[in-house]
Length: 453
Ligand SMILES: *Cc1c(COP(=O)(O)O)cnc(C)c1O
Image: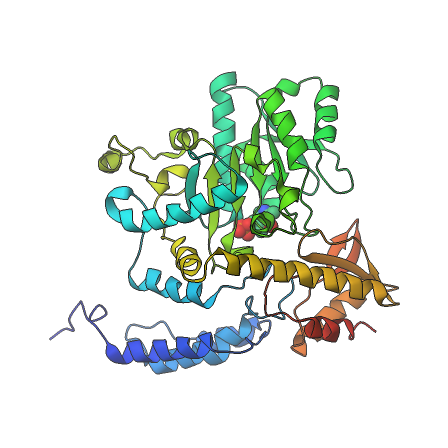
């Protein structure tokens, strides 16, 4: 007799215990170890033969994951992970991510997932309120800032095309510090960059106005992308000035706050975001500085109808989703159809802890950046490159070459003291901290800086 085809779908308490016990252990690591880079040959050997017709003992597979695979993933949630942009989810958000998985929670259409969508929209509303966007604003959660920037700028493009015709050459104004995903978006959507020189690494309204005045075809510029927290240096563009120009000229104003948007919750820096209330579209990644697990980006439009007109997928089997009325179908506001209800872990954590806990945790990262900057300034062989505006700190070790930084960074990770990768500063290799985890301490920073001798 052949085995039952539903044997994988039946309740299995032993498997539940096995995996839940592992997760319980992982959730209680204190601190989370950094772990290590991977060796391709070794990993390949460990995995050999695993995917076979008959499967394996789950305990063996989990052990392989725990002892080999997970050790070859550097933990973004370690308080010693200070590279790129870390990810430091709250325990509540992590736990609820498991609920989203276990319940196969989707958030495609109101018809199928009203409960999940109502909760996601409550979070989008909270963020929109912090930005000062009108009651009519709304959007959806997408996989990341890249997907958010793409989805928003497609709406900007198509909204302009309706006015200028399908053949019009279109440009979008950016400055050098704009994120690489925006440059990728331009390639994908066939729009050119209108490059405006930065003033002190910042995109300003004055520079934008001057560049448009000097250009023979300013009418081809249809949108402006401001960054609310550049990824490398944490610089917030002159959103106020940019928004004045976009309103004068009727341009789409997109604000990329993938990393820094969380600063809207931090009173000590909130003023720097003034002008964001005029954004036509806005992205913030909760999987960065709003302490949600991967992969979660909030995409919000001032006028969601414009997004719906562009992104709604048209197919006869989807007609049932698009009835009249005020049902909210998240799938209509970005380039996606099927989607996980990925806003729910953040919703649960916000509901459990309250917004003040978020403010406190974000301010902790800002404080770490300020105190680290002061310590760097006090240290003879270190040079601070810029007063931190948000939570990233760029600095130089006097006399070091590119190779010195790379060797130091690798040794730091090998010794499990920190994960700090070098970055570029006007063509020079320098060091950078990105603070975000509220469990990072100044003692850890001191320990790391002490290795730069
Ligand atoms: C991280 C980042 C992005 C890309 O977001 P993903 O979630 O990695 O796709 C875009 N813009 C800025 C400013 C970022 O910091």
